[in-house]
Image 1 (cartoon, rainbow, N blue to C red):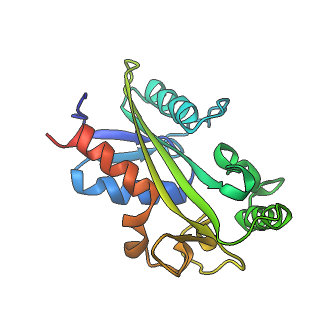
Image 2 (cartoon, rainbow, N blue to C red):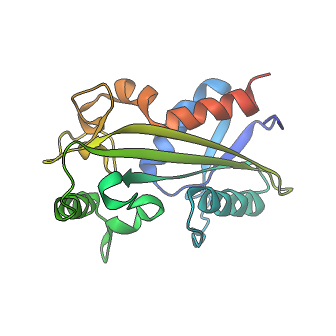
Length: 203
């Protein structure tokens, strides 16, 4: 697999929560990171119906615009009672005229879980697909999963997105209740990132 030898990369996101997590993960590897938002790039339209497809769109767009390698993250939560929804449309469930509101999105997920007549525990998983793309068009894909279940009412003020309603397997507290250093190793993003490290950063 092609190694990432360039000292600077673009993180292809406008999501500050994702940016902060990815920057903290990549910091030990002496790479300088800049976000697509900081560079003033538009957000490309995500027209695919898979995490891989949308991750590729974002990474290749940022790589071509910047002339630098770009790392994108397409992720979401899949709830078994909802046949895998919201899935790739996770962010869309949070869209409002005033911007993204994940409190509304979490309430919608819970309402639909209740309407599904499924029985507890309501299993779910977070999925993360990372795409590293180079300006010449080559790319590499890394996929990570965090399994658990969703609960209500939501709990905790840490994290972002659906963290306050997701309890990872083996724990009785939500991602939203965990301190960052406790949550980070358990996440779908950390799993995908470890594959990225072994594939592209380690000799």
